[in-house]
Image (cartoon, rainbow, N blue to C red; front, side):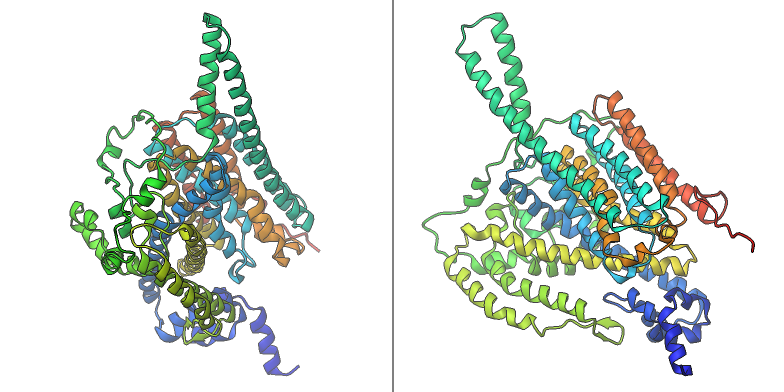
Length: 619
């Protein structure tokens, strides 16, 4: 083996983290030679951008660049918030209606799926091939349960699903301890353990589906009993029994079917889809959220079911022409600034609306809006016809570019080799819709647009999650923080923020119980199928001693704090009769910040972590 082959062998096994140990002039060339640096390149080759094209050669310049990366991370979270709040949440609710699910099953299956899917896809990226997965998933579950769940409990007071809440908490305790057994006890992860973790989640789903079926069977039995009692002669005993059964039937029917409710308010997270201006929603009086900051608000009555057909035909008239206001509604739909929010916002709010206006315009042109709460369910004929062409074209181009990984200097090039052939299908389809559909009502096949919305939304969420992942690693390297600390704090907090967007939006729409159920469903998925699937497709986890790097320095800390959170939650739900209170929200958030403080003290060696120190036997 000659000298060149030896160098190639060294570069092939060298970690990209080694860049930070060499002098600045050598980092540019080394970032191009080290194979591991390709794992930290998604849409941008960050290390080449820093040390080759931006010419970073001083420590203070890295700190200045750190601010830019933090801004990029904030932009990614804004994109996630906008997509989840304006597109993904509405589609998940529509799927819940079409699949005849109840609110709870919709939450633990569909909403939790939307929460965890982007982060799950990131686990298949090379950047997470040799990373502390245990810390990531347990810390994500902890942040989602305490921080996101605490915010839900603070803004709305409600009664949880009694038996389902206890069942989910016990499932989480079992999943957490079983996961710790699989990874820690035998020092590695086997295929059997991965399948076992996935099987736990499958059992959880089956139990929820069977429970929904049993509830529906009980409803049929109750109806038969009520009909039989109604035929009996009136009397005090009969009337009391009939009233109890009718009351029980009413409660079970409310929980039996997922329905679209009237919206008395809707809080938007900074960016508002312009279609909401026609929906008749009122603006949330945000000052009410701050009234009596530490006292629990009264539970609000459930909003009545909404007649979605009324919103569908609200502007329809047979006398209208098929293309009436075709261009007018198109230009109104793509206005990137909501004039209602503009009028009600202050100087800072208006400045923010101007900053995010380009993002709003791009996503409005790209993602179809299908929302039963909007007039015409979000239908805009000319805009939707353009989206039939644009959406699949960009979806295929982005996927192909991510697979081929062809870069021009420091950024990824989109590949249009196969994407251009999508025009053969989409252009005739768009012409057909343009000829067939009307402007004053959506066509019968409008619900099919949810496929376009769901596919491109999940792709964009995955891209943003991947960029956040890489940015968080680079921030940790610049600040000399351990990768385990970044996983335990920064990654988990960013993930909980993206989950919180959808969950808070649901809570403000009157689906607070559904939002909290989705939080617990997401945590159970992370602790079982999430890490099980990730380890199953990662051969490195089967290596000897893999549990050490799967746990990291903060894995056991996160595990113990999660157990504390679950046990204390079991205590307060039983003491408060499953009613949430603001005191519970404050307690949850304080507990999470204690966890953060503990992780910081461990990171800087002020205290010792809950882990076994490495020991070397003398020869």
